[in-house]
Length: 109
Image (cartoon, rainbow, N blue to C red):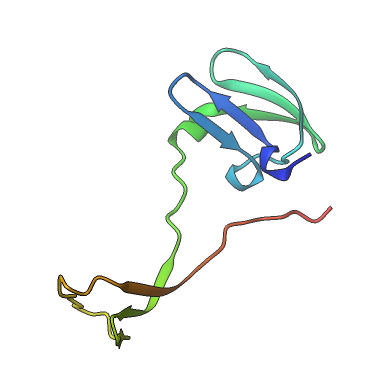
């Protein structure tokens, strides 16, 4: 099975939410699901039986990734001091060198 499809998908006619270990499930392998109609579900995964309060996931906002801009290249100039950097309108070709965390997770089996 393709790993990107593991977990649980919720469809409410307005959006699709993907729930998995990174968003709070105990496992990405869901074997069965029982929904009571009140946004409380019971699911069975490889770790046993768990309760799932969908109200928690409705209000969950994932944190913004931390991105650090290392330098900016515009034309033939490289800027490392980015405080109050203002580029001129004719500086059309701009490159950003940045670092960020990767949130890709592959569990060890």
